[in-house]
Image 1 (spheres, rainbow, N blue to C red):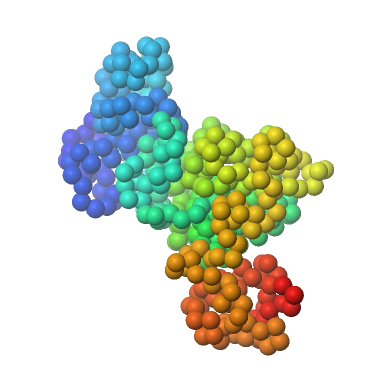
Image 2 (image 1 turned 180 degrees about the vertical axis):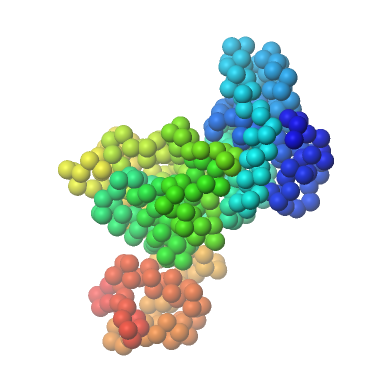
Length: 394
């Protein structure tokens, strides 16, 4: 690959990474954006401004020419800032390394998604010039995403924090709300696992390339996520996660979500960085209180006290923050109140099998199992060898 390949070269470079019939201009633009993901660091506003001003192809040509005067004129930046930007980008104009990144994406089954695509998460556009130039995706993104909540927190989580994160994530995911997190150990991993166990959809944002599982202990978890949701990154495959990339990745978690919930966080936790991005984007922000003596909850208490975060004690609080009725199960046709029908099909005296309940309430087995799981979390039903029954007084 040359630095600025011709159209034929672009088509070859993107084989297996894009789908559909695209015209020549779209092919060139996608290829250039893919290369930019290996040239600039995540959230580089100078790169974003340059690409927005003249397109990814022309922006790449300006970098190749190493003309700070022209770059400064296009961006409206001063000469010194243009010089600094070129000094950051030009060392990474290495054809062999960029080729290797595209090959790694092909091998891992990643897809390239760019602004304007049907599955491009439009919420990311709220980041302005700091939005990703592209996304590398394993799994599937929806064309019309529904309610989405980010659940984040400490890596060194307590059993209390993991328990609360799992309850909230399972309840939300089981009700059709997409759960987003960062795939780290602790709260992130607990949220992902619970969402999957509830039969819901969850997405993971990585700080490195999607071809490498990080942390490595979550390789199986990330693989499970891709079956229904997506594992995403804005950096080219082969890129290593770094401290800066973790912090920059947090803005994507916040931007992709309607609300961010911090379950546990120390006084200087990286989760507070995600919360700050959510607040700056005008997204709803919630925090779970913990013991006042626990250092892993100090950051949550700080959010509650200093940043007007909503106090979150369960999934019902999150749904209220989203403006969703607690009794409605998102994902049902026309938002039908399935919970009432499900309760009517159960008995407080007799145990009933799932297929019997489904026949009585006129819902599918999958919907009944999902609803019963939510009611079990709330303590409204019991489950035993003979089936399910209502809890009296709930």
